[in-house]
Image (cartoon, rainbow, N blue to C red; front, side, top):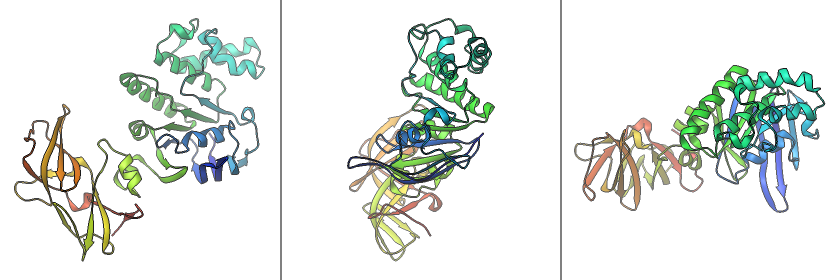
Amino acid sequence: MVSVALRSVSKVWDETVALKALDLDVHEGEFLVLLGPSGCGKSTTMRIIAGLESATSGQVLLDGQDVTNQPPRDRNVAMVFQNYALYPHMTVEENIGYPLRIAGVRKPDRAAHIRKAAERVDLLDLLRRRPKQLSGGQRQRVALARALVRDPSVFLLDEPLSNLDAKLRVAMRAEIKHLQRQLGVTTIYVTHDQIEAMTLADRVVVMNKGEMQQIGTPDDIYDDAENLFVAGFIGSPPMNFIEGAVEAGTFASDGVRVQGAPGHDGSVTLGFRAEDARLADGTGMIAGHVFDVEPTGDATLIVVQIGSNRATFRADKRTRPTIGDPIAFDVPPGEVRYFDTATGQRIRA
């Protein structure tokens, strides 16, 4: 197991800034997920760690050793791509063993390594097949085995599940997490899917526009967002936001009045999660009219028009209010978040 560190790593193409002086430490044996929308710099970060892209400035360190200018083959880093990148004319066995072949390992010596890697991902019965004879999940396991066959120090996965259907993604998430725990290899995983990030990661790095917005455990990121971007990107449905103003410790907006708001007077955005709100018997801290009702099986999502704002609330699966009816909710004070509307930064007590 090795640690990975980035020191002020930046990447610029012409006038496009892909990464802005990124500092990051990945611990030995950690499962770290880089999460963010398309174009946020997460895949660029991974490719720089792998040596497939050069950094415009900064350093890449593996176990404290500067590998910034080392070619990929000298880093002992294995990468799994979104499209699997399997050779269609090769068997599963040949695909898995290809990195060993390129490294000059003799054919008789490759066999044991191939079988070990195939066994780890349950492919021993498929070694003679070609990629076109495999399901999407099986092809993904071949790509994993090919990455594992060299016993890499660092395992990099770039959107590896995005081409799979929803049910298979769930199954493969469990397989990848179990495999990483079993091997203990330092793993960096790129995704735009927050569910993958929350379920897989020891820690999550949320990125946007080439910058790290926040790093922390999945619980930290979900419960204690540092800014409006993180709070709005994480969660399904995402955090509700209501713009208003604070005066003398009271937040006020159309249909909303909350006492005990922290910080100075001025424009503030109030945030809360759908699952933290509770239907009020009479008047509540948040009042509006039912805009839409969305049964999801295990719950009912109620979309409420609150002045010029709209928010989503999670209620019991049997709750069925009528569209247009007045409705009120309360949110426990400890579950309310406040953000500076101008900067987007969290306002803390």
